Length: 506
Image (cartoon, one colour):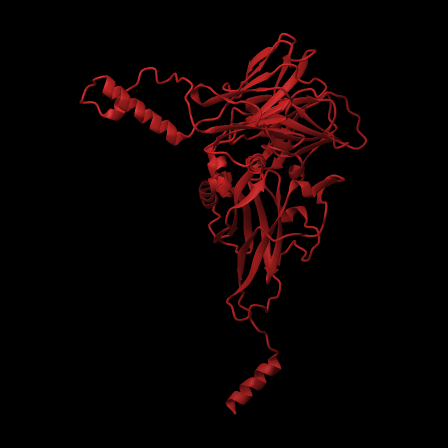
């Protein structure tokens, strides 16, 4: 077994970043985290370092090769799975289902994703939406999705002219995400709840011949549910004498767990997406089922499906816009940028992009590591997985490894965001003009951060570079900088000092 050692981004101890089982030596392994922005797409999340494996020059090599990459999964979900993303020398991407092990490998404890490959390139472990692949025969199929058993697909016999292979994924839409999107537009206040975003992939050459029944969870208005519950309790107390010593809210209604179809004034609207275009399917009847479930019949193939529960009718343009915003917001994260000066060395600054939900915990971790200097925190900004923050300076402070102007930033002047990785950048500051800020006891400047999306980056050789080298738009955040001034000793010639002493004596 070959083991390759690298430097982890959140520890000062050398850690093994890759293990390789190969028939012979002759392999070379490199850590290439600068390419992490190009190793994720869609709803994927990076959970390991980026590893490049290649054959040393002049050596011959025989396949297969077994590569084991350590990874750390901070947030687990039944809707997600772990996969190894592989990019070969021709920049072709593929996904490999790994054998995941938890234990010790080569003396290192942790989680490992192990794959067997027949070509070399770039490896990274990602967390992606779980894919359920299934076969639909001529006799039909009734399927409960393992990632969410409440979601059911029922194919009638003869749904397709021939057996087909289909695939589905589920993107959860929780109440926090829906509330955040509703807060940005008053027109969305009529939306009570939303179902999970269901991805369906059928062969385009095989249209549906018989209706496909889909069942999705779409909970009713919680206020109305509480009101209905209280009415049932009151009716039960009137009809059935109960012990007066028990409070009214402790009376249990037998059979309340099984609810019949309840009549409601709320509207159910189905939206379908085909070729990335959302459409309101108002001609499809949606049925209320038990326990907040809804069902409907499809007669056409759609890529994605989404159900809204409304208090009153909403214009189709608002519904499609809401579906687009929900789909995009599911991949966005609220991030706070933290700038922390070194306690003993104010010229050394740590720049970190932290998920806002983990901000307090991460700040305590930084203090525990001894980074106890001045802390500047930005307001919340929105970033997607793999987006970069491009660092620029203004004022009388810059970085020693930084070239001013609109030149392309080097990799160490970019901070790539990954929601399940620690995103930190260590910058050494210096003053531009040592005689500047003469009326202030310290040098002053500003750190400006520009957002670079994944769409603005491309492969160029073995590097990730900007498609357009010019900076566009305004910075997403600005953080103030300050450096203490040094006490300067003025050295005068000896003759000058003697002349000054004689004038003073005369």
